Image (cartoon, rainbow, N blue to C red):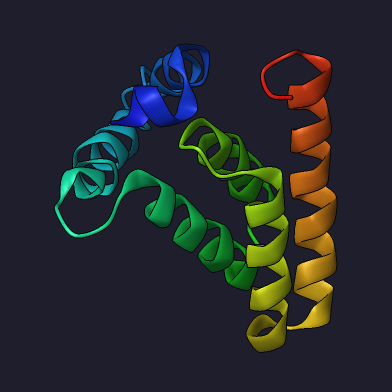
Length: 119
């Protein structure tokens, strides 16, 4: 599930980083446990992506927010849905987290448009 969401290039880089014996268990955990959870019934990948966006906002994890913004668009989340998810989360998480999320996600969306990955 990791490759369809994040793309081959990203996953290959992440796994190469896990080729270090010290870091390898972390990459194995991410692939098996975290991404294994994406295959459970009950939520579509698009719904899981929107949840991740909001969770990462709350945790102030900008790098992962950027990764999952790209993944969300790969899962069919539109620019409007992404913007609305961030806006709604601002109510509960706070304005500073929302403003940062808009900045991070907006940069990813612009890059994807510039690269022809989305319209």
